[in-house]
Image (cartoon, rainbow, N blue to C red; front, side, top):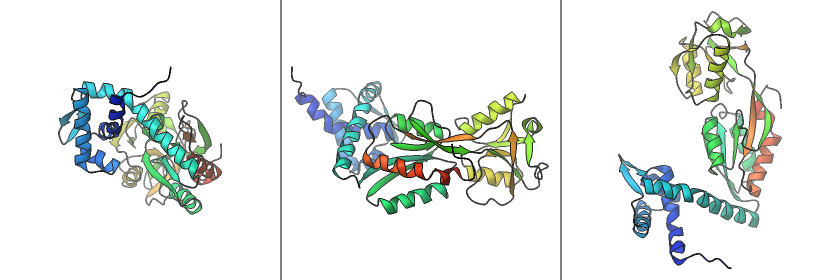
Length: 305
C-alpha cells in the first residue's frame, strides 16, 4: 500500500525548523539568527505550531525560552528527522557540485592558534567554494555534537570509542611550571613528587582533568586544584605567575616564564579525526582526506600513530 504524507503533517513540516532552532538555542532571537530570518517569523511559526497541536511548546525562562513537557516530547521525536532532512539536502546539493557545500567541523581547545588555522587555510585555497562552519570546544562536547549530527567531522583528543575515527598521531602531556619553581631545572618528575603542589586545571568534564585525577589517585594522592579555568593560555599565564602547576600539551605559541618537563606514568593521548555515522557528503570526505594527509601539523613533535 502506498504511503502519503497527511495534509496535517505536510503543514507542520515547514514549522519544525523554527521549533528545532528555538529548542536548541533556548532563545528566540538566537534561533532567528541561526535561521537567517526575522525574530517575528520564528515566533509566528512556533505559535502556529502550538495552535495546530493544541499545547504550549515553550515557556519563558528569564530572557530565553525552555521546552515544556510536551515540547520536550516533540523535540525528542523530531530532532533526528530534522537532522536527516538537513543532511539529505546538503548531500544532494553537494553531489550536484562536489566543489561546493558546507562542512561543520569541530576541533579541541588544545589546538587552534597555529596548526588548525594553517591546515584550514590551505584547504580554503584548494577548495574555496566549500564553506566551513567551525566549532572549538572540549572533547566531550565535540563528540556529542558529532553523535547528534550537528558536526560532520571533528578532531578529538582522544577520540571516543563509539564514533568512526582515524588516528592522526599522539599529543604529549607535559607538566608546566614557572621558571622559578623548584622543579624548573628538571627534565622529568615522578607523580609522587607532586602530592603537595597546587594545580591549575580545567573543569571536570575535560579529559586532561580526568586523566590528572586518575593518575594522581594511582600515585596515592588527590591533586589539590587551586585554580579551575577552561582556557588553556590563561592556565599557562597563571603558571607563569607562580600560582600553581598544570598538566597540559605543549603550547603552539611561546609562553614566557614557563618551562615544561615530562611526568613518569602519564602517557601520550591519541589525536583522532572522527566522522559522523551518517553518509558524508563529498565536501566532508574532501576535508577529511585533507586533514588526514597533514596529520603531522596537528601532532607537532609527537609521533604519528
